[in-house]
Length: 266
Image (cartoon, rainbow, N blue to C red; front, side, top):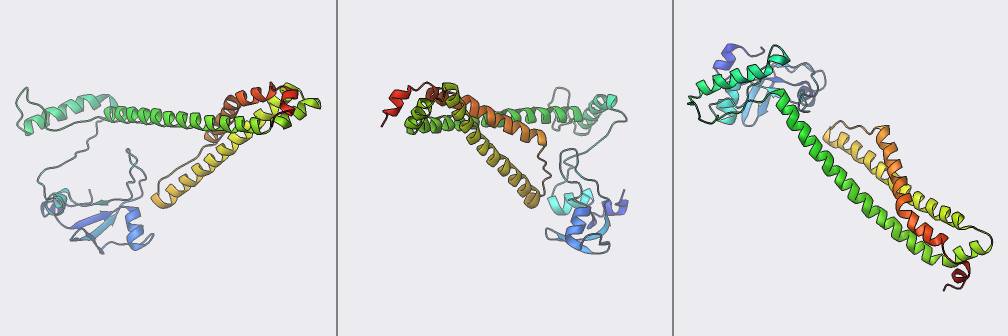
């Protein structure tokens, strides 16, 4: 323990810095022991620096934090007289539920709760936290998938409208191609390729925006991000599939045009 019993009893204004805080305030690799920093309106003396630990179990950066005695937090920073959070560990994973029950029973005694009275505290195991996070992740995934589906639908309808307008404007061109020997499947293939190219261009723009946003988050928010090759491949496949699906009707309409009527089209 890096705080002495005297520090805790006296609610001393001493602080241990995370490595990122140390680098930000005093420079990378500096020794800030003996220096002072201000937290709110209070001045604290630095008595140590934590070794780098990386992200915690909830994704928070453990190095971007400071540590002070809990009594100091209660009396001088928060103005409270109770402890808000206690973290405990069991000897093994199989004992976690039993330990959780023992903690609950002890807290009920300490809080003077009679049988049948609701708990005025909450005890959570890692399994419960993981379950909540899993449910939240599943909900977010479903929401993002729904948004992506609506975006694909709207984009596909836009591609189909553009291709229908293109078929109408190029009716004489299509008739001329058929008059000089082009078959219906040749026209069908031509317009399908145009629809796929159009959708792939949109996919490329989306991938570029994704890269840009991820780099921006890393640069300005210091959030670690990664764009996998699988995601890029899936994006290309969906882009091509959208072009084929929504471009088929305009392409088939162009392939079924009558050459003579097309040449007469104004």
